Amino acid sequence: MEQRHVSPETLVAQGLGEADPGSGGLAPVINLSTNYEQQPDGAYPNGRVYTRADNPTSEHAERLLAALEGGGCACALFSSGMAAATAVFQSLLPGDHVLVSRVLYWGVRKWLAEFALTWGLDVEFTDTTDLDAMAAAIRPGRTRLLWLETPANPMWEITDLAAVCELAHAAGVRVAVDNTVATPVLTRPFEHGADLVVHSATKYLNGHGDVLAGAVLSARRDPLWERIRSWRRNAGAMPGPFEAWLLQRGMRTLFLRVHRASETALAVAAHFHGHPALAEVLYPGLPSHPGHQVAARQMDGGFGGMLSIRMAAGASQALAVLGEVRVFKRATSLGGVESLIEHRRGSEGPSSPVPDDLLRLSVGIEAPGDLIADLEAAIDAASRRPAPAGSGEAVR
Ligand SMILES: Cc1ncc(COP(=O)(O)O)c(C=O)c1O
Image (tube, rainbow, N blue to C red; front, side):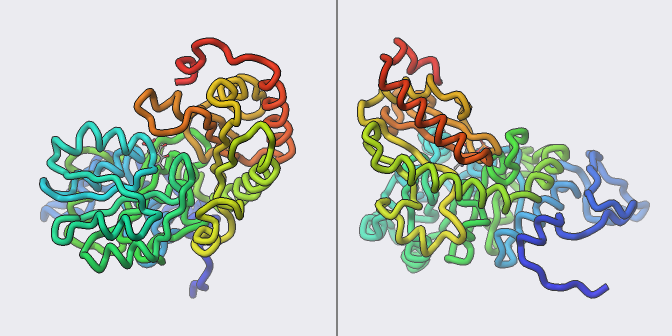
């Protein structure tokens, strides 16, 4: 039957709209086989040999995510977001100069600090929200990659993707965007010129806090892409079929979850903006946020479910609020159906650049009023009690 063109929202809700060819089932089957039968003439009928390289269940999730990010991109799933991110860095060559946004997810920063040098990469942190700083940091002929997040963890700084891609491409530099926080529901970096998109699929893509997975997507099937795929195959960074299957199931509700989390996060941010106990609410949806104008242009349908609050009375107050929440769950990670609260500095350790008065909130899909009332009550209660001694260690 002739197919009708549908939006990514419809495509993802229907899991690509393809019934299983064997059973006619609308949910895809999980293919657990680790190996594939070779024909007497030596051929492999579907081109698959061994599941460390290829697996049909992973391929289904990959096609779903590629359809979401758009632009005819290629997609490879990984066993975690960090496996995906490091595959990109490890596909570069010794001596390559790499620019990295100065505000970014701690795990990537830590990996770069520990392993980039031994890999021979020359890593430099730069402010990707400042085009002049970016232009000055690019070393023509030596800079190979610019790596950034927008909104960037955990200050939610916004980088103008189109402007940065234009600048980078003029100097022959590839741009990789960690799109974990915005998700393709709100931002599709390829439309702004990005060359690579990376995800921790553990977060919004799966969305239920029960899968560890990652993905790299590439605008082109070029030699760098082949190296990234080769890295996955040879380093064994494939996810298991169960994870890939759970991921495709989670992605079916991605639009609903991301839109709901974005609406609630905006309501929470607007409610607490100007609260006397807070020094600052960091959320790109607030007109007071320095990146708001760029975010309003670049993000489509919301500003995401992540925000941070900074307590006016400092770190002890932040820890006291953490101890008083009842509806928000005290936990690390983000992008799930339940709302989380975390003292990032405590989680990241003493060398963290995150202010110690900051609490990071991942807003879920609960009733917005319950979340606002919980935070309000926690802030109220915290202002009436001292912080527990040593609680900085307790939240790590
Ligand atoms: C923005 C971002 N990128 C990458 C990662 C790493 O992903 P994973 O935990 O799936 O390895 C995380 C994890 O928190 C993240 O927040």
